[in-house]
Structures are given as structure tokens and as C-alpha cells.
Image (cartoon, rainbow, N blue to C red; front, side, top):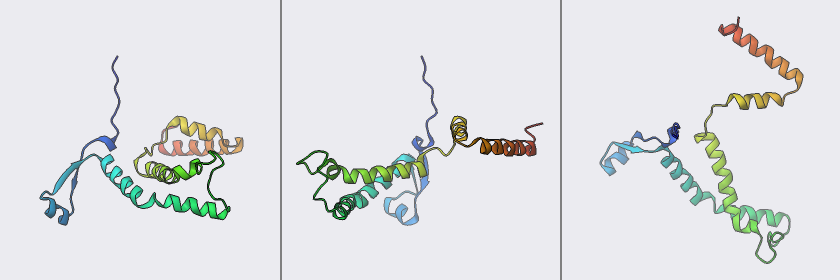
Amino acid sequence: FELRCKTPQVFLPTRYELPRLVSYIVGTEMVTLLPIQIHGLFLGSFASIVAPFGGLFASGIKRAYKLKDFSSIIPGHGGVFDRVDCQLIMGLATQIYFTTFIGSSVISRQRVLQLISTLAAEEQLLLYKELGDILRDTGLRA
């Protein structure tokens, strides 16, 4: 049994040219990093600056609804949300960051077919005709 897979670009070493001031300080003009390390640095910085505001966000929700805490899930423990408010903010930020900068932008044929199946029949027919026109114009269809 042999497992073969293509390593995503984000995990392959890449050479980067450092800005002039940074290269003067560290004594080298180029550095080799994995792109995922740069993404991790960004997310770590974001977490240390923004995630603590998750508590303030949760406090704002509690004030708006005149609640002492989110204790309806675990009475006497301040509620689960009080324990994980900054994690929820970071989870949302990480998902948005991943889909925007790291995730593959290629949509699979299966996903396209799934999306098409959600269209109304008239929209599917219109899409079929438009796709036929595009293929005819590119010479892929007789």
C-alpha cells in the first residue's frame, strides 16, 4: 500500500526577500519559510490583539439583554459562553482568514453540480444554454 498526495503550496518552503531595514538588522537578505508560518504569525498576532475583545463583545450582549451571565447552560458556572467568548471570535476570524487566504480557490466539478441542482428548472435550462454558447465560442463543442 502506497499513499501519494500532493503537498499543498502553503506547506512548501519558499524564499522571501526581506525589507532592507530588516535585512540590515538580521544580516541576511533572504529567508526561507513555509507560507503557513507567516499565516500562523498573523493569526497569533491577531489573537493577542483582538481576541481579548471577545469578552467585551459578550459583555455588550449581556448588557443588551440585561443578563448577569450566560448561566442557563451550566447554572452557577457563569455559562459556557462566558468561558469561550474569545475562542468564538478567533474561530470566526480563523475561518474567514482560511477561506480568504489559504483555502483552495478551485471549485470542484462535484460542487458546481451540487450548486446547479439547487437552481430552479428554468435557471438550469438558461445555464445550460449559456454554457453551450460559451463552449461553442471556444470551439470545444461542435
